Length: 266
Image (cartoon, rainbow, N blue to C red):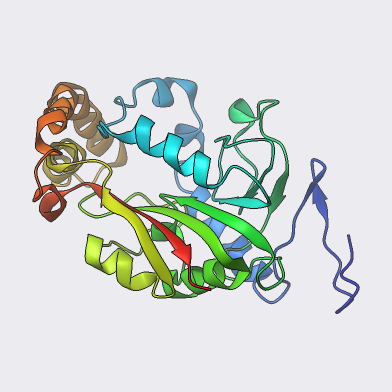
C-alpha cells in the first residue's frame, strides 16, 4: 500500500495492512524485539500458558455495561484500538500494533489493520466511535493517544475507555500508566461524560496484586512465576467479593480499574 499524499509505502503482513508511521517504525520494532527476546520460548510454551491463573478481575456490571456501549456504537465506523482477538461487531475496524498470536487468529478477527495509537491512520473527525479497553497503559505517551482518539472522532461520537488503577505491571511491550477515575476523566477533556465507574473492584485489585507482591522477593524468572501462579490460583475466588464491594460508592478508591463512556462535544 502507498500513501497518495506523502508517497510512503506500507507492507502487508499476512494480508493485513501494516500502517506504522515511517518515523516511528524502527523504534516500534526495537521495542517489540526487546520485549519478546527474553524467555521467548517459555512465554510461548503451551505448558507455561496452561499454568496461568484464571482472570483475577470480577466486573459484575460488565455484561449490562457492554450492552449499553454496543447500543451507543451500533452504527457508522467504529475503531477498536488494541483489539487483540476481541470482536465488537462487523462494522468495527480492529486496530492493533501487531498481529494477534497464531492460536488466537480466528475467523471472527476481521477488518484488522496494524497501526500506532500515537498516529492513527484516519482523517480528522472521520469515525463515529472508539473503543479502547485496557490499552492506554501500554502506549509510550497516553496523552498523545487520548488526543488521537479525540482527533479522529466526529463531534457527537462516542468513546469507551477502560484503564487499570491498582494492578501489577504487565508489559505488552510497555506498561507506563495508571489512572484514578478522576484522572481518566481529565484525560478526555473534550467529552461529556455519560457513564464512569469501576470495572474490577477492590478485591480484584487484591487478587491481582498480592501474588506479584509476594513473588517479587525472587529474582529468578521461573521461581518468580511459580510463586505468582500458585498464589494466583489460590486467591482468585476472592475476586467474587466484588459482587458486593462494587455496590459501594467508595469502590473506586481501591479498584483494579475504571471505565469511561463519553460523547465528544459538538
